[in-house]
Image (cartoon, rainbow, N blue to C red; front, side, top):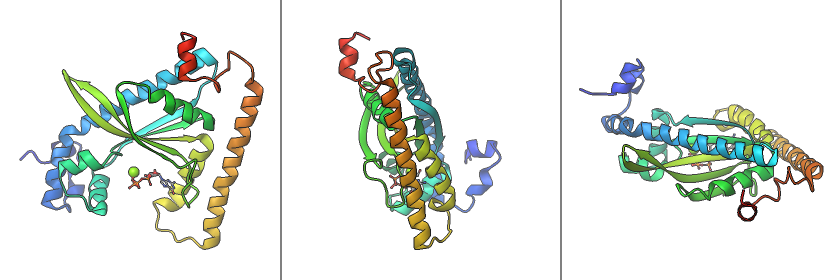
Length: 243
Ligand code: GTP
Ligand code: MG
């Protein structure tokens, strides 16, 4: 039986032994299309790196510090389907799980985040589904980032696949806080006192103030400098200048 062919080849099939037959059947089906999520991440990464390079050569500014990406593990796919109460079907995977392909784009300044999202939204093969702006409205925990949930068209052997990706945009400071808080609290069972929660939120606010001040400094130092006119750059201006 072609059961978990891919996982068994990798020698990690046993870890799915506890799953129900329904869950196993679903994962078997999912493994047939997992590659499309990987292709989607590769294409998206290339697009964002090209935007960064364009900005470097046109404006002497790199908006992007670094990019990370991951595919949701099969265990987490099954866990999320059950946690959300979705039917154990491929349709649930395709319709509701838009974070199977996940990308994190860490930017230098807050403005860079919005500029890159704006530029990305102009790509004809990317359709933005919705945006969760946790910078404008941080989570109660103090979490800040902008989540862009979009579809990207992937051309495979003459066929087009529309694949969802969740892209988390954040600054270096926001990434520092989120990475540590993720370890300390978000995915842990540790219990936190009210005071500790207030402190964690305060550290996020402090880092946000640093972000704002660094942004102001950057703007002051580059103001009026045509080469570095990144802030005033917009799609309209790009057209006008024939860039
Ligand atoms: P999931 O079921 O976890 O995907 O949540 P969701 O679909 O409600 O989406 P949400 O907008 O809450 O964002 C989920 C992702 O954002 C998580 O997987 C984390 O990477 C990140 N995230 C959201 N809230 C927090 C937080 O309080 N702390 C940290 N460190 N990360 C967070
Ligand atoms: Mg998620």
